[in-house]
Length: 150
Image (cartoon, rainbow, N blue to C red; front, side, top):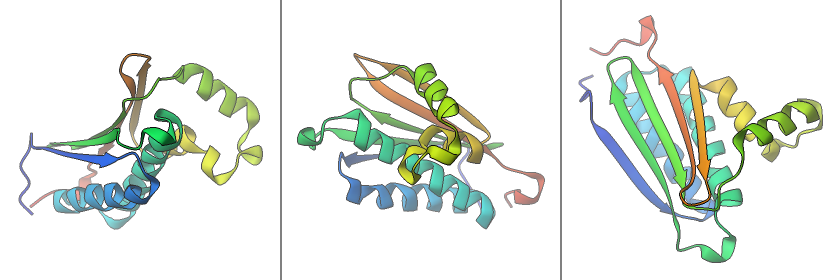
């Protein structure tokens, strides 16, 4: 499978839950094209779905559905970098992670796993958030030896 290293695929979606599936499928197609195995693609899809759901539910108020969530994929020789950005009010990533760890996974609901689930599924995760620029969740999944491109 030929893949263009350094290529950038960007998707801008309305701030609405029904578009999360579009993001998941688009990123899955890119990962498939790169040669990721089925298990890694499923991990990527779940992580992107969680990041997009968080962006939609927490990033921008529902009445501002015209705001867009941006999903950007960067293809590299060693893996795929995905950034989900919402233009919302931002939050304190450290405080959210601490609260989630303190609550423990037994008390979290399916929708409350968010960042913990993303961190468990992806190889590298970085969250940046500012009041002026919203929140960016950058996730990386590296290609493994058995997932080499042809």
